Amino acid sequence: MGLMDFIKGELIEIIEWTDDSRDTLSYRWPDEDKNIKNGAQLIVRESQAVQFIYVGQFGDTFQPGKYSLTTENIPVLTKLRGWKYGFGSPFKADVYFVTTRLFTGNKWGTSNPIMMRDTDFGIVRTRAFGTFDFHITDPKLFLKEVAGSDQHFRLDEFADTMRSRIVSLFSEALAQAKIPVLDVASRYSEVGQALLPLINPVVTSKYGLEMTSFILENVSVPPEVEAAIDKRSSMAAVGNLNDYVKFQMAQGMASGQGAGGGAGGMATEMAVGMAMAQQMMQQSGGILGAQGTPAAGAPAAAAPAPAAAPAPTPAAAAGVPDLLSPADAAKILGVSEADVIQSLDSGDLKGKKIGATWRITKAAIDQFLNS
Image (tube, rainbow, N blue to C red; front, side, top):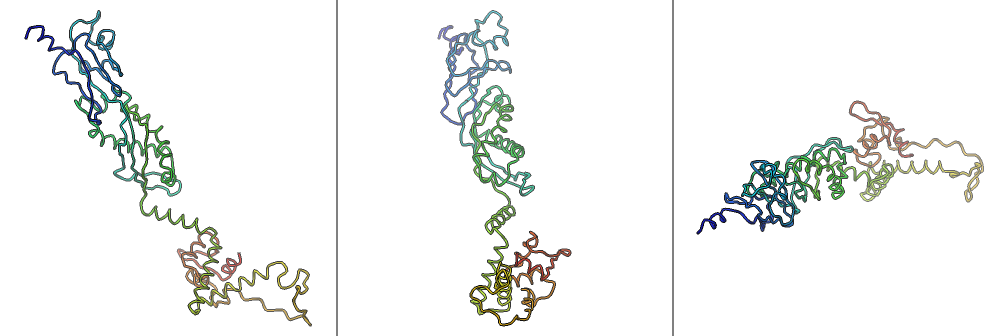
């Protein structure tokens, strides 16, 4: 081997790199301690960017294309190196290839529940997980803040770090967006798109990355909040509570007749019957016409009948005391005690709360049935 062959073997003439791994974020090109020749060819393929680093300082950045490394093509490195009139000798620099393609299907999730303030449920704890896609937009910032001087920085080395950072940003963005838990759980795609403008500025400025999609696949809440949501759905399905109570009374009458009747069934039947009679008497005309004459088809009375005694109230017909507990009222109305308490809390049924105990008058039950 001649001297010229030896010298030529110590110089780098072509710099290029192909990646078959599909998970490489950055790669330091192996120079084998050789110098780069003046006029060497640099080949940067699509979905790649090349960053030169000279004695620990960022030099020139190259996008896809073919370049001859001369003074004109490496102005930053020329300035750092101090070549005032161009260079004609080999030089030494670190060359990093950074992958700029889209990395898809990266999973993220909350290892611990996120505390958030909700307009419907107050402060709740939520868990969430999903996927995100990203690509590198600023090779210098990415190498400085994320990859560092790692010779071969892969996606799996970055996954845990990125996941924790994404969860932190997601928590802050969700708090800023003030999206109710029920809306998060019903509109995953819309929420993900709404959070992107909040997450991307932070990710881009800190790490040189940009997310193209941020997808929520599931948001869960504690079991007690799920029970509250189910209860609210049940209340919405019931609709008008007054009509629901009457329906329950009718069901109680039917079950009482099927079982041969009983004290509770008789009380329910009497209460409903009296309520229906009172409603009929209150209708215009009633049994007598508007002018006090017998209605059509009714036989004329020979003499005025003595004034009838006032009809007993449903509570009196049932033979109940003046003050009732919710359990007593539930027996009269043929519903559960929980339904009675719910009616008291909503104000549909009037009652007096003494300490933690409700008391209901017979008149209040009559008024509830006639409402």
